[in-house]
Amino acid sequence: MGLWVKITKIFKGKGNSSSFKEEKPTRLSQYKEKKFSGKVEVDVGEIKKILGNPSDLLIREFSYYGVAAAAVMIDGLVDKMVVIDGILKPLMVEAKIAREKPADPYKSLKEEMLAIAEIKEVQTLDEFLLAVLSGEVGLLLENCSVALLASAKGWASRSVTEPMNEVVVRGPQEGFTETIRVNTTLIRRRVRSPYLRFEALKIGRISQTDVVIAYLEDIANPQIVEEVRNRLSRIDVDAILESGYIEEFIEDDPFNIFPQIKHTERPDKAVADLLEGKVVILTDGTPLALIVPATFPEFFQAAEDYYEKYFIGNFLRLIRVLAFFIAMFLPSLYIAIITYHQEMIPTELLINIWASRSGVPFPAFVEALIMEIAFEALREAGVRLPRPVGQAVSIVGALIIGQAAVEAGIVSTSMVITVAITGIASFAIPAFNMAVAARIYRFGMMVLAATFGMFGLMMGFILLVIMLCNTRSFGVPYLAPIAPLSIPDQRDVVVRLPRWLMVKRPKHFRPLDERRIKEGLRPGFPKGEKRR
Image (cartoon, rainbow, N blue to C red; front, side, top):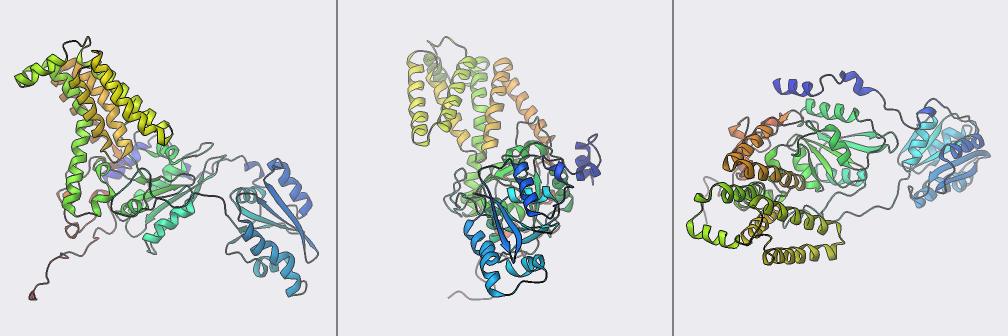
């Protein structure tokens, strides 16, 4: 229970759990208790007044068996063919041909005439308007104090394409889109379990953004799921435009530069985390799903590690871990050795380095700082420029600036090599947010190395370990299962053992069902049978 005591301490002084259930006010709250008048003309006028009668507001008034009726919708948020074939045509044409006037027009409209899969009934104006603004069709009927909502959502959206930022050589080539229902479908296709749960909620007083919490009820720990619900319910902002908004509100330590929440645009990666007992948070309007809890070793794991043979994945994973330490420590190590510890360098190499630095007017720290800032600027320029131009600018700019800086005597060739290796290493880290954290921490390490030499380098490393050990992600230790050490869970940390040896799920997530593979299931020729 100590783990969950730590979770509660995070929110100490921020209210009890009952405060999480308080309903957030919205701009439509003033109409929460406002009922329909029962007069179509009056209600339509009220709707136009509230929405400001915008150009995309479509109101189709018609007669249903001599009773005034109206369909309210937003152009661009509904599928017009569904509206015509499933709503307007049955009510305006087929109803009069098929039968006589019913005794109860409202009951007939609700139960018999609408060829729509999903129909809801609302009694207040704010529910009606929120649904219409979300892409549903609202139906008003004379002398009725309630309204019907027919689902006919259909707006322009990006099709399912290959993930742009998580490319793999082997594996599925499908990525999440900006439409939340498409994203839930991509997960549902891969997990055909009756225990897969999708819990929907809206966040944002103005935007009313759809957010979905996904988890496997028979695997995920209920305490983690409840903690996710509580943290999301506490969010009270005007709008949620991207999952990054949510990430900043629900992470454990907002002042820690290292990411405490994973994000992915790959459905297969999200499903793999669901199967480990984690919770996936989907946000409408963004192709990036949030995954909690997250631990430090997971940011060096790629989906391809599990699709190739384990020794291939292990080799690539070790390269990534090595690249992380190079990206974080190589410039500071160079500065410390050149400034304070020249005796650590072989004599011939030292002579060559000093020969290349003979005309450089700056100390090693300033030299490294100039090159690192220039490299970061080029990297950012390559991202922001149009794609055909950006790559050329990054490559050509780096070559030209590096060569010109060496010829001008501003930096040495050894520093250019060091910065180039550091930059390449930072690109090898699969998680973008972890790579950026390493780049930021690198500048602090450079300052410590320039001030204290190797002692400063070791001090920065110790501070890094202390910070990581004190970090939590939804109460789970950030360095788990390394610290605290769990020997059984070392089967998929730095290296991955064969899949048939990964019998149990990671214990630090406290899954309800620990076993995922039948024990003793291993490849090879069956025992007792002779080879032919």
